[in-house]
Image (tube, rainbow, N blue to C red; front, side, top):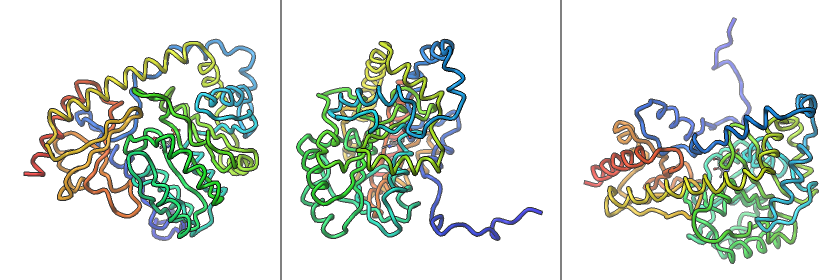
Length: 397
Ligand SMILES: Cc1ncc(COP(=O)(O)O)c(C=O)c1O
């Protein structure tokens, strides 16, 4: 006999947990005629399919060990490759300081598992990545937003928040932020690394977008300024190879990394050997660099197309960021507009976005929205932004 849902008793940590808003909105946008700027999906034609097919065909003698269990820390050649590769972001690391993850999302989860007790405080940017907020909630921690500007978190506000809340962790996406597309300046990076080190706060630097740069000079990671060993750097291949492979990585000093490894053992034992093999083989091939250049050129053109369409169709009162990389632009509207309400009307007009509120810890952001420019075609960008522009003008009339 089936047990009814109301008879089941769930863990206290599930109280108030709802599904991810983006995932719910993505369901709405599954209808083929809806143009969606909602998800953070890479373009389907960015996947290096022919290279991956060839890697699979040429696996050879290692195939048996790929099909076997392996170590939690990850495929050794991939750890070696990454230790060298992150030098490009100014990070000094040995292979022992690299842990392969099942997507960088797992790194956020494992950092929380290792560091947070119920009631602990995590400092975040305002706005911040909403799925990280879900993880903090799942671990019954309290996320507190620290104000900042287009150069990053305000160091004075951070010092004040550290003194007031005694946080365990600072979580941030300093490069091409999700959702705002903005990037911390080098000076802020250095300062935030110093302040958190002095206060013994662990920084989780989440960097899935850093290599998707379309203008300007590459910047060192915040982890590049990590003299005290308090920074966990998270990287991902989701946006530069394929999200379906689920390969990300953490770089941290051994003592911190070890705690993440122990947490991972009880989560998934290790990440997929086959995915790690593919990423290692492709990452080491000469084709990888040209692949990165191709997708950056493709996304630069899409970003420019969306910014031009917004210029042409959005009302004069709208403001938006001009990101130098990543996948998103962030639109700010007059405070009279609720983007939560606007979404309903937009979906009726067959266009979708993510309203701002879920990226805030304090109910702010209802007059903002996040737009993704990587997934839609040029024609969809032109038509979708025209539809959205009409919906916005109606809302403001
Ligand atoms: C800021 C941020 N962190 C982490 C992730 C998760 O990425 P992954 O596919 O590597 O788990 C995303 C995905 O969109 C993201 O935007």
